[in-house]
Image 1 (tube, rainbow, N blue to C red):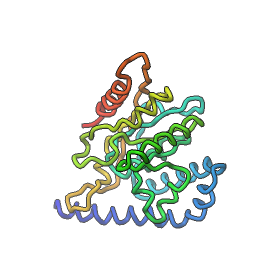
Image 2: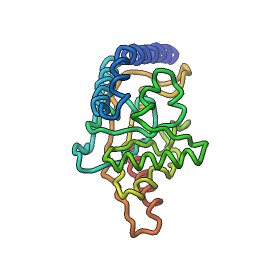
Image 3: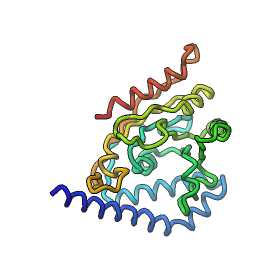
Image 4: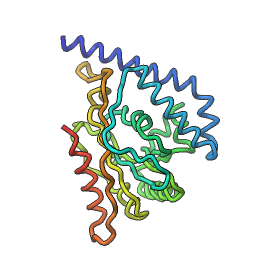
Length: 244
């Protein structure tokens, strides 16, 4: 019985990938137009949101959001979710109504077709190159100073022992500290059970419900000597509070 579930899961995963790439190719001309010029980025963002929700609908992934989603343009947030699955990205777009950009790993810019999202609109960071990584942080600060929300996965990548959290990198918290902006912790509780980062027969791949918890913001406290550590640990604690 277990191997049958595993086989059905792999079939569903191929279906998921098929839906993703077919819809991406259909929308690609619009992406080329809207993601090539900054003045069209807002419209491009809405197209990505539509695309994400369409994929989730077609593959049978439903979402349940708990907590308050900031739906105003007066406050800039640094959104920090745990990273448990590639579903995390789709569900961020499906759940958050306000414009945001990603700070993603440099490898994403090398993926053919998919790299359209990182040529101009989103940012990349090469963590293996300290100088380039520092420049990416400076670029992220410039974007946030213009009023854009920013998403950073503080773990950097999907942990091997998901759902356990990896150590958080300091980049997000340096940005929050430098710009004095709040961090919005987000917990994805179920995504690793729905689309696991594995092709083994025992991997979990299926349609279902994704529970998303949006926590109270963590605000910088510049009067604290160890403010960066405070931001990092408070964010980690809130994210971990909803993980089994």
